[in-house]
Length: 358
Image 1 (cartoon, one colour):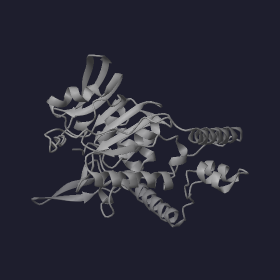
Image 2: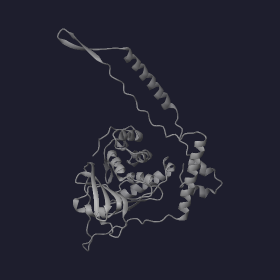
Image 3: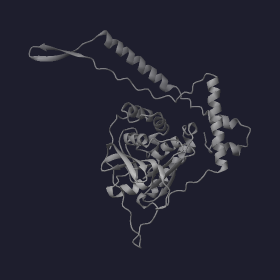
Image 4: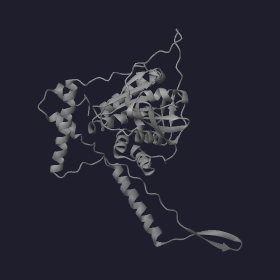
């Protein structure tokens, strides 16, 4: 599934294409997509496919097409502080993007059938927190993943504001999914080859809307244990943050606000990281055709405009080449700089930076 937009050269290029095709329509979704490089969730040797609008699968590891994820993110109508459940959380790519919108007071849970994929998701999450330049630009709701079949969730589990299921839901399981949703909540799932948005309007009432036609592998049916019963899966607890964690959140927020005000007072606009320039395509020269005897022979039609375009293209290529030779300066992490300049013990500075190495 996918192929709705043209391939990009990098993550920003892919997002530009998704915006142009109206798959990404809101600023918060765009920011989340730009902050998480899709290529980071591919195995080494497979990144060439990362910025194509195509699904990717290797063993148990799977990523849906970017156009699907963008429609899902838009349909969920995410807001800070909401609770989110990802049924079939896979690599954690979607859950991590969701966490950037939910913020530190949301709940972000995922359940995944394959234990090796959960380990992969945890590795990718740890890498994002430790090394990504985007981490310090957001307040993050860290996902928590558990291994299990999403059709075996314990009946006394809590309900969620937003739910996404990343596998085809059989009609028999539609009501099971709906019960996991709070009143006023939104569920997005593929059912009968349609990606569907379901809003729970009351205890026993729902409104459904088809988003787009899709093709998903169906949910795996649960196995019975030796007693002939299904094993139940417990979701992560909805834990309240401790005082130490709250202090870190508010110190970082205060410092981030201080930096923004300081820059505003100095008239310095915060710059987004530079995007890779798209190479301008060279137009083909227009040919004219003349008859010579019985043959129709093309003749190039030169013009002053053609010559100007040739000169422009040469200048652009020379400029691109000289810019490529310049070493790129790493973006400054102003929040980290501010934390490291505080008169605090090194251990506390490390805690405030989430033990990040840059």
